[in-house]
Image 1: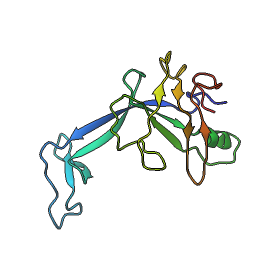
Image 2: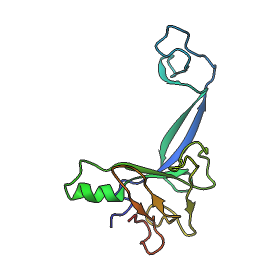
Image 3: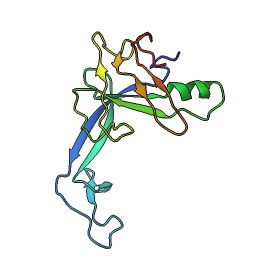
Image 4: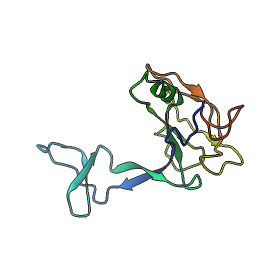
Length: 156
């Protein structure tokens, strides 16, 4: 059973960047109708249909995290056994944190959030509820992170 560290788990922070000017690219431009975001030297770095950008930053602690990213345990096992090229990632978002309801949707399009259970302080003792179900054509992992009989800090 791989640990979250073996699954390259990382804490995620959601960051919203509001567009400072509201400038939309004009007709004839490759990105016509999209908001153009500029970096500090005035060069375009992103275009968006919304007047804001969404970024996800790696953070060090559970206290500052809005979610968790890790390699799929089922695909990880297949990869380690030489039966798969690589593992896809799983992203879960925590209840009561700042990730908006438009990210982390389940297979029905509803916002899905996981509760951090009491006693969790980081990757090595993280416990989430409920179980996590991955619905995808190539994978059907269903498991827990650190509760219901699965050792803390594990996903299996």
